[in-house]
Every structure is written in C-alpha cells, then in structure tokens.
Length: 431
Ligand code: HOZ
Image (cartoon, rainbow, N blue to C red):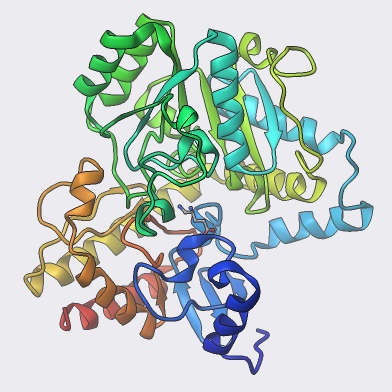
C-alpha cells in the first residue's frame, strides 16, 4: 500500500486553500461529524488506507458501486485491457453497445438505454424526457430524496444538502424550484392530494425506491404500488432513481424486489464498475424521444467513456455470472453485521433502529421506525458523532453523516464483520 508522509490534517488544510471546503463533494468534508477527513491513498477489498497508512474497514464503498469490494481483479483487468486502446474518443464504441444491451437484458422494463457520465446527468435527463413527453413542467419529489445536484432536484434534498444547512440551494431560480412539488416519503395520501389539486400539470414522480440519502429508508408496503397507480391515472411518468439501489439490492434492481415497474429508471456509478457512468433506461417509445431520434436534447463527450464502460461491463458480467453466490453472501454477511450491531446496542441500552435491505443499511439512534425525513432528523445526531469517531479511531469507516446509507461488499468477510462488531461493542460502551 502506498502511503505518504503527509498527514490527513496537513492535506486538509492545504486542500482548503484551493478547493472550496477542501473537498469536491460536500459530505466528505466531515461537516456533520467534525474533525478531519481521511484522505484515501488506496483501497483493496473491504479496506481503504489513508495517506498516513492507516487502514479502515470501509462501509462507504464509493457510495454503493463497490459491491464486490475495492480494486476487484476482474474490474482492474478490464480497465488495464482498455487503457492502451485510448481513453476518450468522442465517437461511439462497441463497449457502449454491449453495456446498453446488458442494461436492457437486466432492467426488466428497459428496451433502450442512454449512457451519461454520472447519476446526476441521468436524473436530469429523465426529468427532461418526462417533461418533454408530457408537455408538463411540474413534478413531484420526496423530502430527503437526493437525485444529484441539478437545479430542479435541490429542493428539500437529502445527502450533503441536508447537513450543510441549505436543503434548498441558493442559486436555484425560484421559477424553477416552484415547479418542484414535495411530499414526505412513504406518504401516499400526500401524493394523492397533489395529483387531485394539479394532476394535469405533473410531468412525473421521481423517487428513490429505497431512500438512501437520509440513511436507509425502505418503502412501506403499498407506497411504490400507489405511486405507480397514481402516475398511470394522471398521465404522469414514474421515475425510479436507482443510482444507489440498482444491481445492489437485487440482480434486477429494486423495481424487481418490490414488483413495481417504473416508466424510466436512472442508474449511476455501479454500471461503470465504480468509474464515472450514469444511464437512463426505459421503453423504446420514450427513449426514442431523445436526440438524435427525437426532439429532447441530451449530450456529453464523456458519455459512455470507454474505460468506464469496460469497468461497468466487467462488474455487470461478474454479478450475472455469480449471481447465485454474490447476493446470498451479501444478505448473510449484512444480516450478521446488523444483528451484531443491534445486539451490542441492546446490551448497552442504547435506543436504535437499523433498517436494512440486502447489503444497504443505516443506523438511527432512535427507537421508533424511521419512515421519512422528519423521523430521520429525530435520530440523535450528537450520539452519531461520537459513534462515528469511535469507530473511525478503531479502523471502521462509516459515511461521515447520519444522513447516508452504509454498504456491505462481497469482500466483507466474516473476519471483517466480526472486527466491526467488536469495534461497535467497544464504542457502545462509550455512548
Ligand atoms: N451525495 C453522495 C452520497 N449520497 C456523496 C458523494 C460523494 O461524496 O462522493
């Protein structure tokens, strides 16, 4: 493992001179937990190593895509093979066709795919398609759902937007924000009311089928089904933002797990094997509305970048080939981890709830179930800070915010899980 003589603290101080807040994505600045971000020098399997050479069991996993662990050999091989052939052409490649075909095969409702460079671009594109097809401007999103940082979505957004104090960002024109209708997650009557009042203006409902940017909040039974029904009744599109959940919670995505079919699905980093890629997928008649076949414009020089596509293909192929091993393994190790954490808290009388769907979970310091953003905010944030730093000191890397999900990978073996539980037990004694 490479390490440098630079400390995290020195690097953070230096970073802040040239990068706003010293980071290129706000959550990484440790704003909601305090202290110094760890500057990562390398990663392998379930562990990341910081610039001081200290290693941590990692539950960020690049926010989801490292489902097989960091620096997986199959993905590295694919990138190495692609690298000498060139890094970007601004012209179509065979790899993009193969990746689109894989997505069409594996996302049940997909007949076509458009690749982008990030999940943010994918959700921007999906919203534009919904508006373009319906000729309507308003849309519904959920409080605490995060769909990337495009203007229309930065209204009551989760993730970093929730913790830096501006969930509805300055710089978003009021005229645009006014078109974003909000409802609490898991509150079907609230959505129904919006549709009743102004159904003819609503282009779409966009939802994270499992909210992953306020911690992890699964849908209550009937919620996604209800959204499907309302969208169909009112001529609006239903968009599932599966940037976090796609291929993570089920080999055919969350929509298969819950048996609800959206009109459009957005995907992100996991379809690039952790490299920069996003995708919008859906039925042919909708997707062909995109340029150049249709009038709805969307473009990007780095869309379908050859290195990202090579990594994405390698990951998706690995997931498909070893599906019957990978997903049960993830389920078993994640269950073991969460049960162990919960038992440690119970033994120390610490109020908690730990929602989990497959290998995605989060820890809330409150007894009652968390069904929406308001509930998530009632989790004890001070306790989370102590917990977070206690684990970090003991070599366990959680997301530095109570409003993020944790991700288990195939490389989190029994030893790593048990080491994590032992660290939690120690820290629980301090809470
Ligand atoms: N918004 C991302 C997680 N929900 C964090 C992105 C990052 O810092 O990489």
